[in-house]
Image 1 (cartoon, helix red, strand yellow):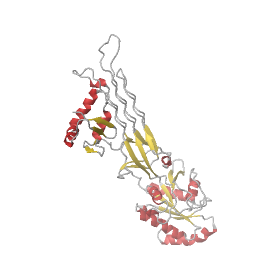
Image 2 (cartoon, rainbow, N blue to C red):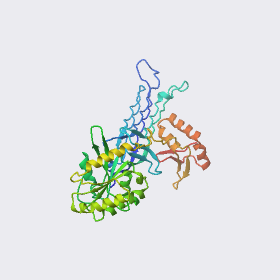
Image 3 (cartoon, rainbow, N blue to C red):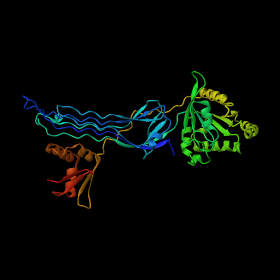
Image 4 (tube, helix red, strand yellow):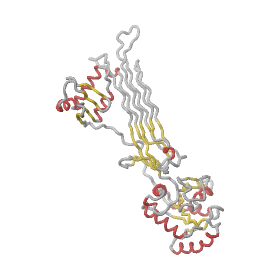
Length: 423
């Protein structure tokens, strides 16, 4: 199961409705309209939590809905706004449009916030419609629905050093031996199915983040095995520690196989500094194969090769100091900052479509037309007339007449509003 990609749906809160109300107090017979406005719906934010390192939470929950705004009330009381919702994600989360794969933002800083769904504005109470010629309006508007989006979350770990190697090469043991992390460890392939992070502390002010990433197999660059789920995380590491199982039948073959997969993924891995660690020197087979492995690697021009044992901690400290030295020599990782919000779904399309169904019923469809229906109150003649004027201005009335609508015909606006045509 993959824990570094998740598809979620977010639904911001709907705006509350405005109300029709008139001031009714003793000795104030002509108090006038005092209907309050509806509250704004809650928005949804993604917020970075530096203590998270997987998207496991989103395997159990896919739908998120913010609080609605409250309806207005008399005495010009506006409804309360809906509470915003914050969804925590790990550092290194990329937010994408699942249809176009467009990136909305790359969240890399602790507590960074990205607005992903805006709450709907509240409706207007009748107090806002009072004019010198209409001093007692009996109309109000409904709130606007909040934005709804599908989002693809993709995690690329932000770690200074990444552990690479075939399954069972000893990466998890290396992580547990050099950091406070306690990954699951067992003597069979693919014990690690999700990335693990640990902090290496070499002195009071010196250290770095180390990532143990699931093992590679041949064909990973084409999606075989854990494939992309592994390679995606290695992209952002600045130094690679390549662990070789010294007790394996062909350590040199394993070394070349892993490097071939890294190169085939084509993410600049061939340019990353790599420390090669011949692991399991506590075993006789590794001790026997080490001299030939060291000679062949150095003959090929790879000088950074070390004999270690993660089980006994032999040589692990030297590797860590060498990795820190290389990190000091490298320029810092630069990631383009994410915006504070993703593009708004509106403005709405003004186009509309008119069709006649098999049941001889007329259907009017279009974002702007349907939103106008959502905002209108059909329990008031004034509100109905206002809605009629909006349809007239959009050209819907004339278009229906040209299409052949007749007295008494049923006209649907979107899927929710059924009206009867009257001249």
